Image 1 (tube, rainbow, N blue to C red):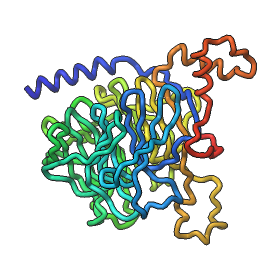
Image 2: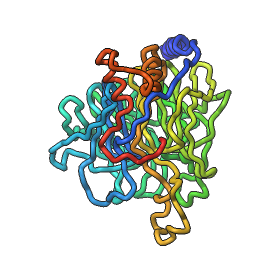
Image 3: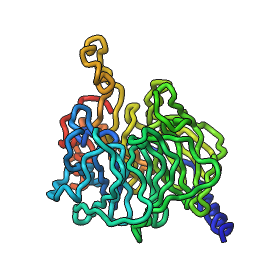
Image 4: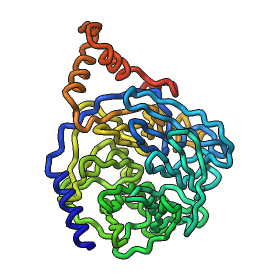
Length: 409
């Protein structure tokens, strides 16, 4: 039975991935959205929901309700939701948490503010815009941040992360049955990933793929000097709960943490991130094909985001929406800012409020709109249908959630 499932899965992946990667294109760049780092976001229908995160300089010691921002992917407009609910059922503002979508519900788990981490499960209803705290049972995981989460069938899988109360990382896998709301500690076999945080977990055909992250072989945090950044890709088969290191070929990317991952047409894509050993931020895009185990670097047309980490990426249809994150601050002057030794690390970074759209399969309509947009000063667009005029307008109209930062993304 197990062999039959594996053969069907292999045939399904092969059918999807036989076609070559198409010509992707960065099409939209808009500022003025939520200025957030280490937030968590998911897509539900044609909307993207972003939860929490932080912005340098804000207070993350005081307990306050988590903010929720919604992006309409048809108009590229952000909206901050007002949710007048009691503190008991609303998660506190945090970073390093995860969000997964299951039907019309979004489940938030883990994360921390500057005081404490959390292991309470919260549910956000995208129809009613109300929070709830589902009653759970079983083996509830310890509070943590920097872990990963993904949905496989009716289960939310949680992997790794940092446990501050014991100052160590984990290799644990936990699963929450979203039908029965029961937590289970998963006993695995094989070769699990090295202890880590700020990696990505991607689900595909019953397999959880783990890549990247800040690796700490001892599991105990002591110094950034002992951080490692390997490029191994790990896979856990959720039918057998066994780990393997995937033998790969091709253009394997440099190891990193705080990158983003998404799936399209049977391939896994990885964007951006940071390697502290090299003190380098990235804005490259890599593809992994599970059928051939081949890595490839992808070079979309257009102008993409600047190098960054801790951003979010969500796919809606054939478009990937990337927003937020942080990058080196070109205006930081260490000599002038010696008086701010305590927060000099934050001052070296710039938090983003921009939105970038990567069209994974650009249509003729999209290409024509981009061409008209580039010639707007020379063309009379008043003769275009109202729908196209509206699209041209929103494609270049900044949002007004936060003030523009006057950078090029």
